[in-house]
Amino acid sequence: MSEICVHLRVADRNPEVGPDDVAAAMRGMIGYKQRSSGEWLAVGLDGRGRLLELVYQYDEEDDFFFVLHGMTPPSGRTLRELGLER
Image (tube, rainbow, N blue to C red; front, side, top):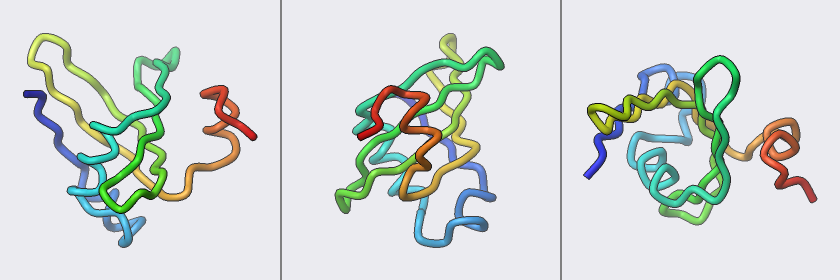
């Protein structure tokens, strides 16, 4: 099973998004892509059915996710970048 670590600033900047919400959204991803910077952008559903925007780094060797950013709802820019806009 992959390990998911959430940066403390996620909850600092978005108090309504906790580590459990982020982990659920990582497991419930509906769209993702790797950016040219190497970071990944994703959206996923948390345990409360909310759509979260996530930015994370992935270490394939250790199967380790480090989430740098998480918020709800996702920005329009993120949805466009992932091809999920309305």
